[in-house]
Length: 332
Image (cartoon, rainbow, N blue to C red):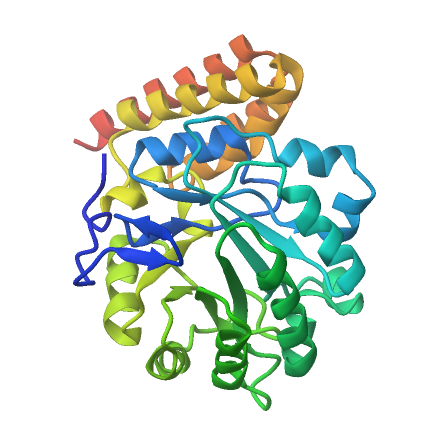
């Protein structure tokens, strides 16, 4: 089921990244602590075609970290699938690519965009925007050893006085990447302040490879704005998909019955994947995202945070459904 935007309304041809051909120009971006298998599979049902696993640290892959290996759990229906690498040391990056070659996936993204303090302190993520030559060298290494097309994720620069997205993009293209993901903010902005559509547009104009834009993709209107103002080839959806898989259909969140039915489906997916105890715990944060904007649900969020069994969480969801319907009836 491909949604309104999932048929390349804005592009003449399908989105092509190396040998990967996509019918949809909307991509589910990797999000730490969020992008697990149940989350990806739910979003695929609503029109998401390409989804990403959580960002993978190269050192953690080298050290066979159990959590990192768990993040790689997938299935035959979880395709096409992208993986994103975080690192800055050639020996660890090379070994990580070798380890990942044993898994089934379709795209390998290299992260030079993460603004987290602990990441940039290690010289990883957005820190690499300050070292374009080093980034170019690392990308050549990844491209030369990856079994699938390689892409790069960047921001427009480190801060407002060092915006260098065009330079980095051209250097990365020269290194052999197949597409560029770009977030329209600087590292110093984090996720605050406005998205700079014009900087993304400049990058699109100089690049000969697909450019996938991101930043404040919270609605169909903002998706359209990103395509229109930047001329990008695709849009990466991150926070806009939290509690809102309908964004891949180009529609608003539905009425309460459909909303809560989707919550139950997501809860079931979490429990099936993790087991009841962990699955319910994982779902708690999603309850808050699904109920964002609903009136007087704060007490229910408190209950959800203390739910320990699938039945308890399902009861909270049902209370949410009936309470919201009652309030709507009162208003009418």
